Image (cartoon, rainbow over all chains, first blue to last red; front, side, top):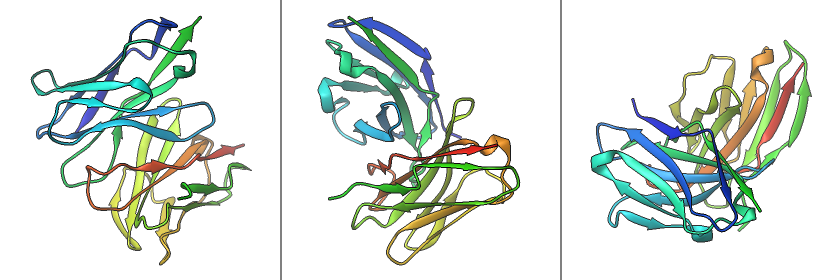
Length: 113
Length: 114
């Protein structure tokens, strides 16, 4: 069975600092990988996804993630945090052949002025 | 295009009652998935419907059921509600062409069971 581990339930950064949210997956075959963001009282919004091809994926709002097969990782980064980035971030994976998203536990990003 | 809509947005029920939640997917999307979100268990997959057929099912008891109509709208039903069913229920839609697709989420229905 596939699983996703997000290190750190909470990450705090200052405005303008680098954002790094960690995600590791376990999969016997190369999966499809996603990062979603959830703002309070809202649903999930896709930030970016990796399917095939280039391992560095650029998403919305200045976020990007790099798929590293050797490390089974898909960490999310943003060079400079903005107050509006404060939200909960979920890493997810779909197994080959199925559309079911398996989510990590989520990381709450706190941005201080 | 309009996004995924879910009704109602908030619901309060008592133990033992049943509840029906509704989801309207993005126009043209034929796949609808349901997820339960709780603070303790996080986001968990309930089931997926594609062209009125249940294609995948998560590990939930039989009290949780769903269906999809010919216009791709979907409903999920929970019978004999328990306190632990209190959660945010999220619906997501996609074209249904495979696991590489983006799933678009609605705002959710927040269910409180007293």
